[in-house]
Length: 341
Ligand SMILES: [Zn+2]
Image (cartoon, rainbow, N blue to C red; front, side, top):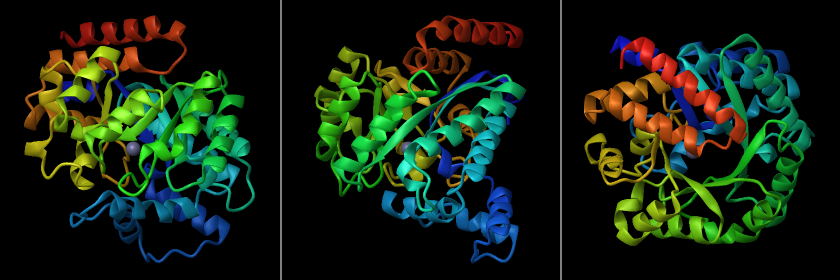
């Protein structure tokens, strides 16, 4: 590992709360709340929470979220898990992060969507007090949920605009639930003034990227791996300045792309597509941003200039309050100068 990569200031726009739970925390919350786990040891629990090398699809990948979700049904659990994720990110020098979660996956014990958002927000705020990191929230609408439920999620997000929530997203099983099913949900988000990012072109084709941008008001695209399928859609993203939130390790695990060698991140960067670098799910994918940066350095010949380019692009694309962006950019420039790059 390169020491300078560890010390690089980092920014992350695509990170799922339920994919980033520390196994030790799942063990402790299960014990506290009397939840039976099928694992006998922390090692076994950790392996249950990680995607196996044999994973063949996004649907299979998503099964790894069920276990942590069982332990994410109370304000205590959500607050703690959110705080720990932000602290873990701050530890590897992430300066700004957007954490995303679907409120309606956390209502099994009676919490409302607003209570879920407030609990996550409290955990992130606690981390911000103790560490040099700014964290904001993205509220996820699930593809397999009804339009009505997703509209409720969007309305809950609107209540927290300027109180930590900065955007909404559509996530889940892309292959079986195309984006147009939820067009009216994101029409509402747009009317309410909430920035939109959409998972697209991961387990579905480039056409879903076009739909996300043209009909669902997406300002950013989650993954967008399969953009290479359609040059016109690539041109659309360049024209509208819509960047991709790429997550290389996860993209190979979900088979959005067959192998690291075939991952198009370098190609997109060279062709002027906006590229940002993210983890997707630190626990499920067994990664963190430092590992992703090392991967890019070793397999994709990313140099300091490339890391600076993706960081600047991520700051531009962040949904954070615009007045914080110059401050964030200054902080990055100061750190790059200290590193002599
Ligand atoms: Zn994702």
